[in-house]
Length: 285
Image (cartoon, rainbow, N blue to C red; front, side, top):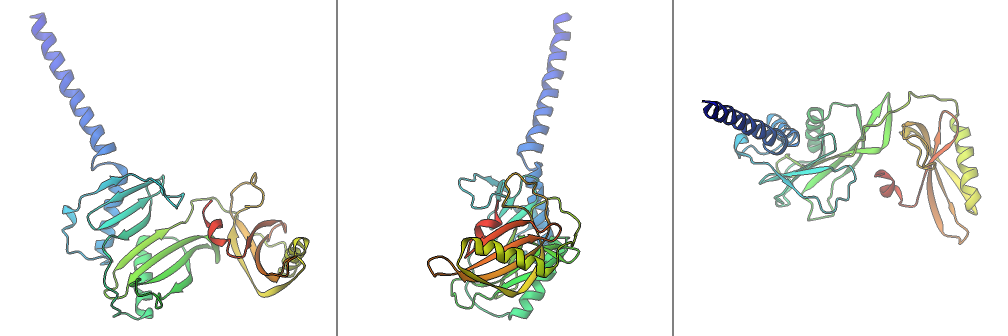
């Protein structure tokens, strides 16, 4: 009788353990895992707003994790692949990248204005933050790029986050979303404090430029943007409002150079300096 009772208890325990293991596998490795769910939700959203072709049955799409060997984007934590798409997620399982695997023919049926309307419509459904258009690339000079590129930047209270970009590629033929990337970083930011005037910021920037170069002149355009301190590596990475001062000049070898100098509008400190094409390196920390 004792043996029978022990066998029953053992059997119940084994079934219980199997159920627990099955739940764990489903929630952390299988289709119920957070990263897979986030990818499914993103594709479902794209289907609902007609941002991609819906020829494939949504429920039939299979999602698979792929190993990241070398990512050029430090924000990418995990990548998920389907038959037709690739999806990148950050460490919090936010979708920060989307690409179509198939490269379509370069047939232009949409003009730039039509493509922009589509891009902004898609973006409103994908990203709920405040954004402003930064640049547009029509890719007209390249027969290998069958899409228009629209680059936006996050902004708060009218001030753009200079180093955070959201890019949408719109297929020139059908208007579908060809690619999406989001380098916005979930960082703290200060409310804007304007203690330094634009002219004071220009003076500070020019003095800094002339410490290392022969001559320089400040260009007229000066913007207020959010940026963090990349000069002092020990400083907090909280974004604050800065003036961007553009200076053209010559170095000690009489070579023409251009600097963008970021001056804190709160205290006049130099937050960052971009020198002749160094901007791309500064975007990713």
